[in-house]
Length: 180
Image 1 (cartoon, rainbow, N blue to C red):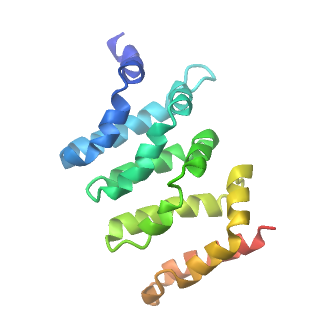
Image 2: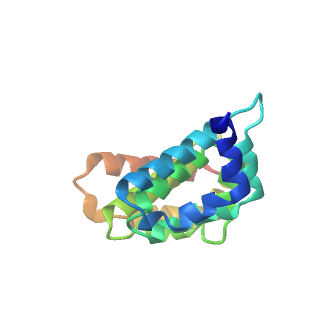
């Protein structure tokens, strides 16, 4: 009975935003546990309802906090994992797309910190490579097509020897070029 009520405590106590804001100050194992708990909460269903998704839709600032978490190098891998789990849900992806700092991903992928750059690139790739893009994702890519192609064409060109990275970059450029 106590475990059944634990998610409700997460929602009512508003502890999730606090955990995300301060994730960088916790130990490595604690950060790992926070991201695991978040993933478990996201998968929680009651019949056809997804209470955590509903909660996050009512509290979009939590998705914003995850995006901003890349500013903390010690938190980036964990918030990135949490963000990727969130992006599996269309309504949460839309919250991120509408966020004023969404385009920070382009700043993050150029960072010297490899973990942050590769993680932010992975999240960006999810948006572009998804064959079932939401209309908001499609519109953002369409409206920024020349900028995105230019950015990717010049992005990390010093990684010429990494064939997988070159292939992924070429694939993303091709996917963006297809958008009319």
